[in-house]
Image 1 (cartoon, rainbow, N blue to C red):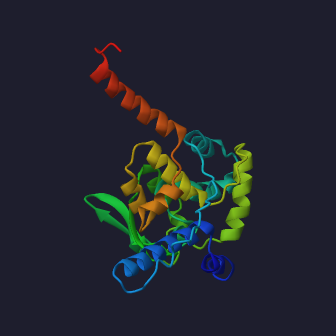
Image 2 (spheres, rainbow, N blue to C red):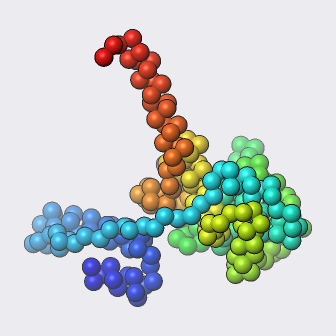
Length: 239
């Protein structure tokens, strides 16, 4: 627990990240123990909970409202960058640093192929219709090969609050919530979690399971599909 406390206070890591790192270290130490290199299970009495707080995201309906409600032209750009994050899973800093060199054509389709600024982990995501439209819309801002020109995080975040208020969305939404919106939406639409993990640039699918909230709609669809299959198999059986 002392190690976990150190990571929290000295390294400034969030509890979910601490849990992930400690579980990795625990696995390594247990492997060393079972190979007879250390005499006892160092982590035998160690327990830490991920204790991950619910992360805000926009539902599909809220995202549609965001895309169709804004009347203030000055807020269009603020909104569009969030929408871009929601359809590409890029963090704000990855959007800020996105260059034309990172957009490549694969089999006639445009993809972003790069590495996450935070972790250096490679990721790739296909540019769907909406993010392609947004890139085209702001071509005139492109500077020094940066797709969206020079943007300031704090200024954008302050304006994003105005955007959400104008849409009647009361959630505490930051630009990073765009990544979570993507993960949640992708899972609710049936994208395999392995693919979601790859797009998000996660090295461990456990991280994706923590990050991406399975919605009630997703569960409802899955259970309905399961029920239909059961009805087809057991429909003629009388209990």
